[in-house]
Image (cartoon, rainbow, N blue to C red):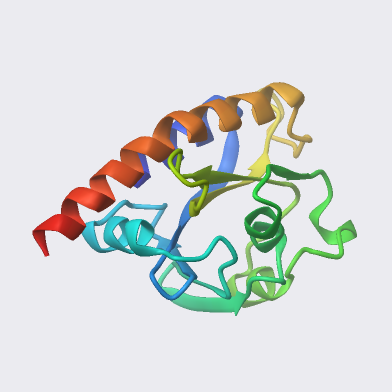
Length: 173
């Protein structure tokens, strides 16, 4: 499930939070509750016709958020179809502070990676991990090249599974 994927990344990279944002058939991204993969989310991922989502929509702690794809670090990842690493969120112009302001969460650093369909390269989802921490002190520390390699490898392995699952669900409906 999406929750298991996020839990894996949180443990492997020692992150405070993370989510998976799924692409729907309108080119929007949906995620939340730790990135749980639902049948609806998987169906939306399979049916997208655009590699340029227009809006991200997701839930954090029960609060609804949406933003244009040209805003935020996850939006940059979606537009560039590439990993985006930000060592200091508040120093990066792409960072959308509204989420921290609304939730009281404090984002220090971010690592986003796209999940791309192997068949046609369309964007299925964006994995976003927040606040890598030192294992000993718990202090924020930048994501490493090893973290980037790990998330790229995992996303490349998970994307076909997500795509296949979404197609199965679409065929049943």
